[in-house]
Length: 162
View (cartoon, rainbow, N blue to C red):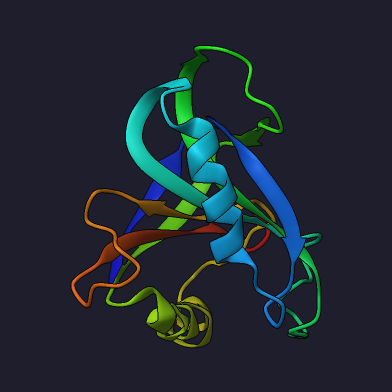
């Protein structure tokens, strides 16, 4: 499941966002509204899709509350716009260190990967969670309905007192 530690250079994405919580998860609707807007409208840097979570502060996970709101983005990495697309915004992911995990399986079972990351890997590592965007990279190996689906989960980390 754990793949590697990597330094991510600043990454410019474009997409749409919504406010949601773990108990009121509208991710599927977000993606359904995003995909038609981007088809043939961008010169993309890659065919990968980026599902990005921006949590309101560094304490979001200290006391878990499934009602607590955060921002969810459906995005792609682009070189340029072919034309202006209504409701599309820019999102900058700042440079930083990430722990990368491979989730294999149905999207509905992704919680198992996140449980491992936050309850096993992170507490036993030399790292702490950093307050930067979290994201998943969905390449051509991703399908939310196939048991052999794969996606990369990128978790922002730092060394304590770094």
